[in-house]
Length: 230
Image (cartoon, rainbow, N blue to C red; front, top):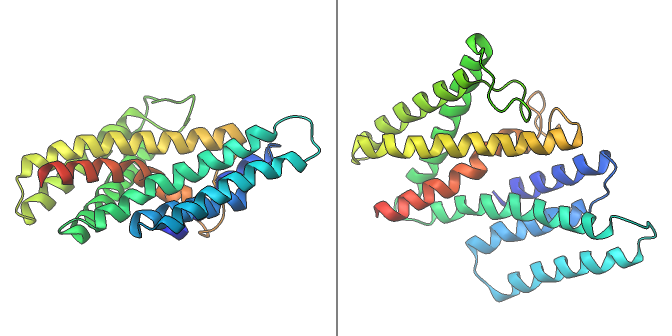
């Protein structure tokens, strides 16, 4: 997860850089990596290292000769780091729970169920646009199909894991909403910078953000549910 977070932060910096806004993408990747590691290993020196990179990256802007955009450059890099590392860090917390491996599998499986069903149905029979100013290809039919598939998957998974199936349905609604917002935020980033894909790290499938955009928002929802359900 730490490597994935670093790649996502680097991809965001690259996208903004190619659109004319130079960012400290290397620092963003380091901070994102550190944030995920910090969830796994609570140590003062990790906090000090993260703060050191953040402050150094800000002070480094003082030596850039461009007139405008220096603080924005630093800000975008740090927001990218928190977006990637802060949200993916929830997967580390999930893994640390009792039955943590099962909860991680639930998060991945539910996300994939939503993404696959939403894409397949939206691509084949989707006619009514959903948030098309952000994602022109997204449709209501796809969102509904994704929600339906996620609820079925989680209802069955919870039954197998000795939980109430209706809890799976309830979590399915929350996960589906999170998956939609995760995808829309990534689409917004790509639209802001004029990119179709976030990168090319996965040949034929785009970048790391393209693959994990929904999971970034799903992970906190699953963690909250897991903590509340005991």
